[in-house]
Structure formats: C-alpha cells, structure tokens
Amino acid sequence: MNKCVLSISATAILLAACGTTSAPQGQSPSYQAGVSDLVGARGSSFDDEIRRRGFIDKRGYQASGRAVSIWYNPSTRQCVEAVVAEGRVQAINPVAEGNCR
Image 1: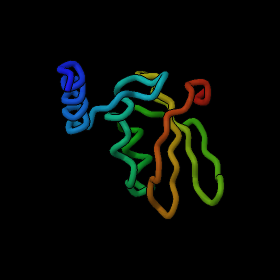
Image 2 (image 1 turned 45 degrees about the vertical axis):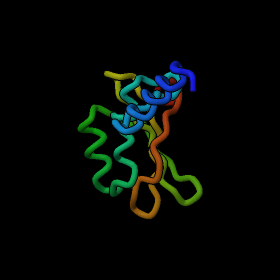
Image 3 (image 1 turned 180 degrees about the vertical axis):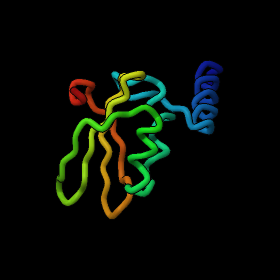
Image 4 (image 1 turned 135 degrees about the horizontal axis):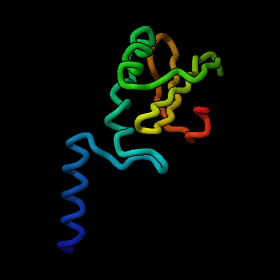
C-alpha cells in the first residue's frame, strides 16, 4: 500500500474515532461537534439546549407529521433544520444560511 494512502487512511480513522468529520459545504467545522450530539434528544429538552449553544429559533412548521424547526447561530453563522417526531429529535441538517433570515 502506498505510504500516502496509508497516512490519509490512518488520519481518517483517527478523526472518526474522535468524532470529528468534515463539515457540510458552507458550514463551519463546528457543525458536527456543535449540534450532532442532540440527535435522539427529547424534543422537550432540545429547545433549551440548542438555545444554550447560541442558536435562535427562526421558525417552525409541520411536515409529514413531523415538527421541523429552523435554528440560527449568529456567532458561527450556522443554520440548521431540526426534525422532531415521536417526541425525539430525529435529524439535524445544515441548511443554507439564507433560510435563517
């Protein structure tokens, strides 16, 4: 195996073990570390925790029986969409910053 490939593979494994991954395009590297741990959280405690992390609730709506809310963090300029179903956060996805205006 090529040493360069081995080095890259080892780095990827170490980063994965540390929970660090590349951020989605247009999002800061803190995206994954900043909110991904909230997936699975109870919907009732999610709002307080994401606010504690500096996010502002921009709007919410219902879609296909799920509650969807848009959150913006002005410090990191992160815009995320949180999907809550059956009382728990099912997904937190990055969305374009323009969706948070």
